Image (cartoon, rainbow over all chains, first blue to last red; front, side, top):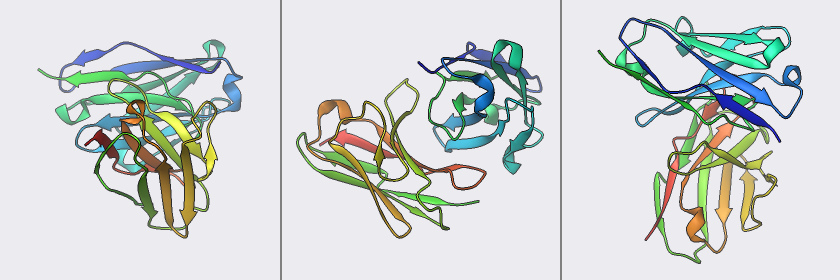
Length: 114
Length: 107
């Protein structure tokens, strides 16, 4: 069965970076993009962008350009998202999802606090 | 970006009721519309894809429909396990965009 296993919760200081992972199993990894989504109580669900798991090509929502960097390691079927220059507004649950969002990871809570 | 206007934001209902949630797309999205259910502390679960198709394992009391740019999720004969937040998603063009959510709760 399709599974997306994400890394654990992060507590980060303002100005720092975090890198979260999403390991896929149960399907051919390179056949589907990996999407990333931000969820907050105030803004709801926001689409960050996707990475082509075969070529490494990316497509970012304008809002998240410069904030998120998506990468992939095909050898381990794992996608990564780095969030940089963190502010309290980046505190959220971040999900990875397969392709146009059919299967989701369990989410990673990122808390930015001094 | 395509705006998805979802209503209502909150929907009190009784067990056994029939309820409908609606999303209106600001541009043509064809049938590239999905509905998700999210329970507290859990990831969203795909319920409907292609505007009208039931995802695997979803009870038949759930259905999706389209009228022009309005997309609806209907739940017949509400059960307690259906109490959750429901979101629509358009995946016709990037960036994908979600509706703001409907919290379905017991009246």
